[in-house]
Image (cartoon, rainbow over all chains, first blue to last red):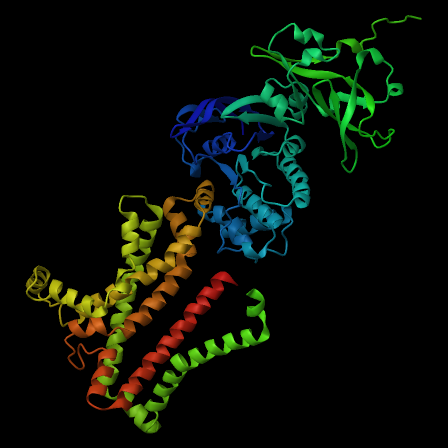
Length: 354
Length: 271
């Protein structure tokens, strides 16, 4: 289903939960609503479902405005954060609920249950009650139940939040696969960026009720449009006076410009590890920590502190070592503008042509 | 301190105290009643029970208690729903007033009904003009029973409603279920264990009610004489075996109901 949202606003008392949100979603896409808790993601999802009424704005499904339709008539499936399974019904009764409500013939209901049980890998659990299932199984029942009446749009509210880390990983790829197979337009809410990056076709970053940026995970990582997105996606260190770093002197020309630097933008090593020493800063290792698959290194350069990772294959650094640091790029922003800039000195100042 | 409590002797001592207490206060008196009722042998026990007045008293009690229970199930479920789901001024006060029937002396309840519904009162005169009497007839007994057992259903339903998540209802809506359908297929089944166990407790309490009923029933043997008052009458007329026979019947009924309640609750929590 093609989904379009225009000028969406919602206030709870004095609290502006959603502010001027606009987006449109193509049929068959899997969209992740990502942002900090309390940022308005769930409110947007609930408004799409009809469980909450927007103060202003239009919600359009398939070119038809659905603002005034109750949740019963929107043709959506909703998976709740706590699954909201009916405790007094078995797995198959839970799945059948929406079909019985829609007065499907008995034989077709039976068929559909069998189909969904198969699809969600719940064979053999049809007669169990929700409290006899594990968290992952409950999640899949909730998923099957939402899908049973063949909705046009699937909405998932923090679908993996209540599941422990290891199974969460499995379920994510399972969900991704399932949605690809069904080709159903889906929107899920999450506060976990790994989840959004791994699962979604497109991510919408929501903060303080606003849509900060919409794009593929790679676009959002590579080209963040706002300082919030830059600091929220990935890890980053805020550098107040970025102009002091070698290669970023241009920034100093604009007062009030700050920089965000991600660990993967920074290379650290001994003098002999670099070919372009002129682009590097010298600093001291102020902290070093083993992370399981790499070293986490903190370097002090004057009063600037940078964080980076270092491969286990390279020579081991020691606390207090003098090291060279190459900052490949930084995300710069001031009150008016924000942009990504490369280290100006990385281009060999004296190219030698042979 | 915890060390001391964990020691074997203390644990043994505590358990024995509780057991002893239980035996002296509950098991012995009950066995006594069973013994007393059979003290003149089986034939006498059966004839005590089949004594028409005794039998009528028991049947009347069961019938009126059933009516009171049904009314309490309907009103109690509604009241529990309103107290949990709606927010209105005075809700807290109302909620604490629910327990009043437990706290009031039952004789006071009887007196209240007598004054409010007697032939001289407005309600009594109104009922009279419609051609029936409340006080000293079955309606008064039912009202007394309803009042005394009012809190049971409410207090059993409330925790279930409270722990129920709004998202279960919302899930039903998103699957196309109307409000009415959601109530009957999702909410009511979730409340059912509470309604059932509340109803059974209310029923067994209504069977046993004496204080409120004795004042308002009129106690006409065979017509408005309930079982508990019958027992009292048998003791007064120096026929303890007759009293014990009816007591045994009531006791057994209560036991069966208690067992049913715990069965329903076990199904709800365990299963």
